[in-house]
Length: 253
Image 1 (tube, rainbow, N blue to C red):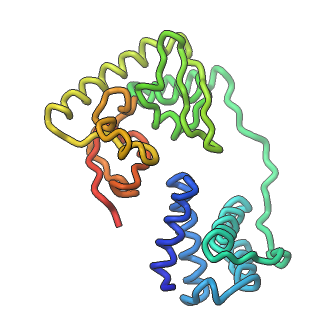
Image 2 (cartoon, rainbow, N blue to C red):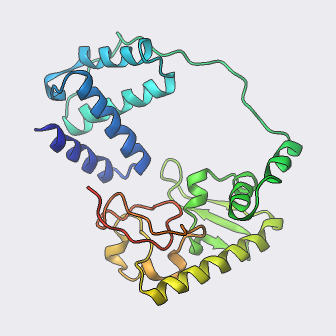
């Protein structure tokens, strides 16, 4: 199996297991680095020793953090277990990167308000939702109109960390700002429909099941991109592209 074909198989396996696009990019990058490190040898021809040598070099020569080294390890374990069906022995010969022992940085309420005071418009609203609703950045950028309930002052987070849904509150002071943002998005949505532009990307296979959903109002993003965006999965994959509300989605290879 050629390296390029192997990466295609890895990509298909990652998508079959519904991993995030960020995880896909990271895993593919580490697998490429692993193959280059061993001068193009196929992973099936390598094993425990080669994996340990690569991971050790990351810590001793490249001085990567422990979390970065763990990400590389996770990528290689995925490659061997899920793609090549090879169970690697316990990797006890790896020199581990050091985990820093540091105090977490927590802003006081005054510091938070001072930081928010430096923002305005959409960046201010996004930061305020992160702080007030406990959203992660991608969760906030992927909010769909249908998942906002102003009456109950809540947002439904779809497919969050661990592929779990949850409901978070909207601070009362943010309700009028969210409503105004919805009006702005509606104006952009209607302009795109009048211009005949394509709609938003949809998760999983919903685009095949509901072909008109991408151009329907409920599925639009609260924070759409002002420009057209490319879908990295291609039209058939339909990933959720953060912020790409009204977008053209050509296939990328």
